[in-house]
Each structure stands twice: as structure tokens, then as C-alpha cells.
Image (cartoon, rainbow over all chains, first blue to last red; front, top):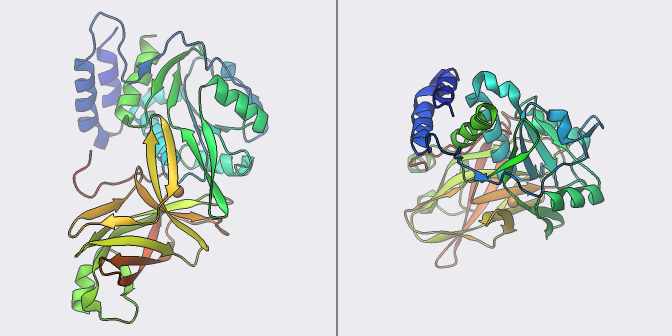
Length: 207
Length: 157
Ligand SMILES: [Cu+2]
């Protein structure tokens, strides 16, 4: 794989970010097995027999499947807009990843799948993802479709009553699909935007 | 009053303690903020730094925005994010305890209106000392953009 590309791409990203970002990216690359199989910051789940596809609606009501995002690396995260913490943090990180990718950011598609179809109306979902990046897309399905999709993606979600409202426990991983729509990586919520961006870059250039 | 201003300098604090002397204000609040919402979004979180002069607990919060204000703890169990209401947050003497994404937060639920960036949200925070004495601190927390990330004040990770 080409070691030069990722670093050069970083240096075209926002200036303030460049120095620390590139330094850490280099650090990450140093641990990379040169000439061997591509190593990722996320967990390599290439060949997974789950997360094969989805059929969900976007806020405009259009049905979407993975095929709609061919030639892009797709990041999929499950969450709900009432989440005060993990979901906005994950989407803010995804926006940072896009910035770190520089021109390659156009080849990244971030999808936010709602686990709260009861409260996450198309209007709320559309406004919510747009607050992070106008290209991010929220997807939803009815209760049954959501259950199917979550099962396919090995994602757990569980309504938890609190006061006269409820919150939802949910799996916080981000899945990364390559440009052929194949599930490749499981990224952890504890990983940084720089680690995510390095993996996306590898999927874009060394796949 | 000077002492009071110094203690709470970083936060927009209006008044402390219910009726008793300011000099006894035990808990200081810093860098409070609320995450903005989009229209029709019904819940959001508030984050801040708390420091108590003597061992205390943060027991509750209220706000005129909604009657549904709870103190929550977020925790990861494996890959799963779990959020639960907690009865109190321990504030050991002299230690800064952060309510921040990935840990504790104040949860505002059943919001009637959008919480907009640039607004300020009043909160009444209730603390309890070892002796069971309660202290009330009023703060006004600025609303930051929905996509704000936790800005660690000191040692990040
Ligand atoms: Cu909460």
C-alpha cells in the first residue's frame, strides 16, 4: 500500500489541524505493517456475514439501500436525536473525519440510523444531521424494519423509562463499508477522528 | 460579594445558597454549557465542572425550561451506551468533578421549545454536605452549538 498518500492528504486539510493531526497520523502509520496486510485502527471484520444491506427511508421519504452509496466509503452509526452525549459526539467526530479527509471527504457518506422511530420524525432527523454536516443522511424505518435492520447489523437498542420519558440504550459502534458496499470495519466510540480518518483513507486508497 | 464573584468567576452565577451567607458557599460551578437542539427535538444535556470545598454531593437540578430535569450517568458496557438517572454525584473535597460527554450530565427532557445556540439556560443546582445541609446554586449556562464537543479544560485524554 502507498504510505505517502494518507499523510499528504492530511496536510491539505485545515491548517490549524495539520501539525498535530499529521504527527498522530504518522504515529499510527508507524505501527502499520508495511508490505503486509493493511492494518486498521478499527476492528477488521472483512467477510462478515452480517451488515449486508438495509432498506430504510431518508427524511425526504426516499427508500435507501447501500447500493445508493457505491464508490463512497460509508460510515453507519445507530442512535437517536434525544441522546445528549454519545450520538452528538459521534456525529461531531464524523464531521471532523470528513474535514481531515480534505478532498477525499466528498467520497465519504455518513449515515445515522435512528433507533427511536417514535420520536425521531423525518423533520427532526433532517435538521439534526444537517447541524453536523449537510451531506450526512439520517435513515429510519418503522418499528419492524428497525428491528430487522438492527438484527442484521448486530446492534442492540433498548428503551429505558426515566421519569415520564424514556432514553434508549444502544450499540455505539460505527461500521465502515468500502467503496464496493462491503462491510469492512467496526470502529469504537473510544477512537478519535484521526484514527477514523486514517482507516477511511485506507479504504479509499488501498482497498 | 467579592469572595462570591471570585469563587464563581468562570460561570455566570447569579446567587448562591438559599438565604444563608455567601461566605458559606461550598460548591463552585465552572464552564457550564447546554447543547443546542433542533426544532422539535425534545431532550438535551447540560455539562459543567463542579468543585466542592468540603465533601459534598450534587443531588438535583431544576430549570424553568422543563419540569423534567434529571442527573444522568452515561456508561459504556462493551459497545453499548447505557444512560441512567443517578441519585447523586459525589464531590470529594477540592476535586474538580466534570459533568461531560462520556460521563455525567444533566438531562433536560420533554422540552417545549427549541434550545438555541447563544441563549442561556438558568439552572438551580442543589448540593448536600456531609452534615446533610443543603446548598442551592443558581447558574446561567450558555447554549452551545449542537455539534459542540467536550473541550477538556485541563489534561485532555
Ligand atoms: Cu441522559
